[in-house]
Length: 429
Image 1 (cartoon, rainbow, N blue to C red):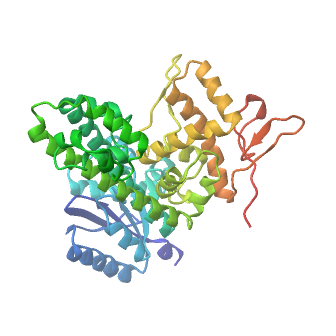
Image 2: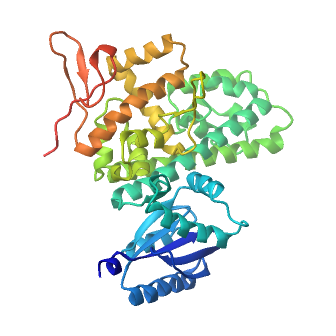
Image 3: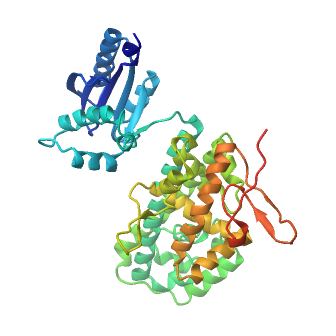
């Protein structure tokens, strides 16, 4: 009877953009069936009906493994969790290495799905194989919302950067002197000025009273514009490029408004996120980067140690030594969005905490570049962040004992004499 209870129905899904290959088997090693489903409601219905049929026959629990969790697998992955099945994410890099060690006769989606079942079977006996299958933990809804909103905001910001770069290049070719009146072409007053006339040449004939009516244009900006109007010059391209410049300026203003609305919405949702509020207590970590980190981390239960969190955030390197050669290499299992937010947060953090700034300067004196020094400091902050999230403790700065220096944040980490950031926080009630 105990053996019968231990039996588990295992499902391996090789995810594609339109079709998914599925292999079903038991934890005993028996393969039940293999089939394909369409990435549409009818295919999902067939998928779950087949699982329920075998589940009723065998009276066992269900575990599903799939590549591309939260990618092409959506919304199938969320539907698996809604049915109460255990969901595992197949780590792409480790799964590829597994297939190199245990190669198949050929390469196809069907064979990859069968390989997932083999990996399930092997993970019961080999710890290294178990690391390839990462169980997806339940995440708070507010963090899932923050992930989608922050990624949307990042796309809009990147689009705006590309638009401004193109705008500056066109202005430099059509009217070089116009860019000299502003330090940045993305300034609100400058974009509004470009749209205050029907054509670019008409901008050189606007009166002072008209300039003062343009949004965000004050006395100083009006004086700069009037100084440019006296020496305004346009190339022959202005007849057909001028309209493009104004369209880009209009698009930049639209993006500014959308980004602002998203930022306000993110700030409201971040108030309900424990991770966002905890990270917000770290000096230098602003509302935007903490919201991005909360969305990408989702839940600290995903990480077995602070090292895995540091690897995920791009703050750790992998050992790459051989013989007398001692070196490291950059990991490929990095969340690039979380890494970008972490780099910004750490760079600002060092300017608020003297000990962190001293550690940064120490690494720079050792010959490290700016980004390398930031990652070195971020590696220690990952220890701090992991303990803060695990214990639900906020970052705290308090006076040091016996001197006027301050000690910073979780006590878990490092020794004080090497001036690495420390944390000591109060547990939330």
